[in-house]
Image (tube, rainbow, N blue to C red; front, top):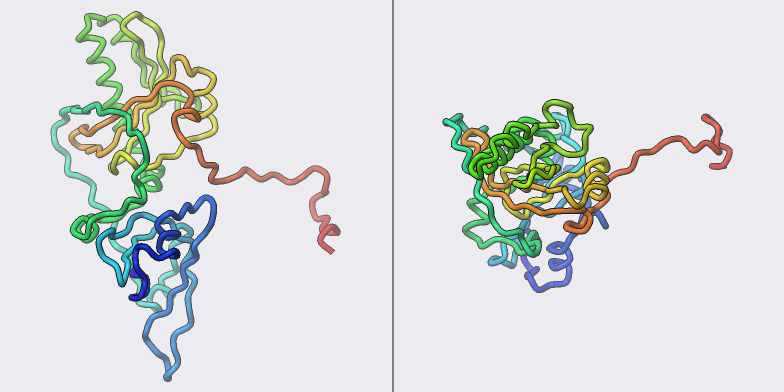
Amino acid sequence: MAIPTSQRLADSMVKEFIAHDDVKNSIYLFLRTAETRAGTLVPYTYLGRLRYLSHDRDRQQPVYFTWQIQDRRLPEEIRARIYLRYESEPLVPAYVESRNTLVEVAVPTSSARQVGLKTAEYIARPQHDYAEQDARNRRLGLAGEEAVLQREKATLRAAGRNDLAEMVTHVAKVEGDGAGYDIKSYTLNGEQTFIEVKTTRGGVQTPFYLSRLEAGFSREHADCYYLYRVFEFDEGASSGKYFVTKGDLSVNFCLEPLQYKVVLATSQPPGDFSALR
């Protein structure tokens, strides 16, 4: 999306768009094409709330943004009316023999989400909301967990602790997601550790989703809880990069509440709308 030709990167409205936080406020997209019907412009169509993904930090007048429409997929008849088509989903990488080459990197010190891209990168790189895709992709999550599981076992075996390596357990696969963590492992001294794995095909700054159960478990077991953030992950090759943090996730990360569970208030009987009159 290009902001009108008079706008520059230094303009106040453009700065607000670049710093946009969709948790705190909303940007709504209405679209009207240039097509006319009997000399009348086609009415505006509401497409949903927007989430900032990136912007071109080199070009201005106009300024170029990439946004994610958050709310819904439009019905086919509406898309046809405004000449809108969806891009195809990214292709799943072809299978290659597993190499399990996870490379550890330092923990990032800050977020670079709204720095923007150079023009060549902005044009060449597809812009995806990886956090949303990751949350829906159970196969990706399992592949990342399996890669970390194998790495834990290999580390213990390399240190001569085959006994502990045999005890490493893929809890999320055996027991499901109700444990609050994914893998039970051990230190070289035999102390138990709990590992949560969050995997993305995106870059190191990609946000991820966390359940209240997972957040609570990290707080209650902070002394032996580890998050493995796996990124730039190739499922077929089981390769990518990762960093590790220890302890309460609310200390190491900024947790943003995104939704609420809503139940009927007990003080107002079902069907009683008198308070609205």
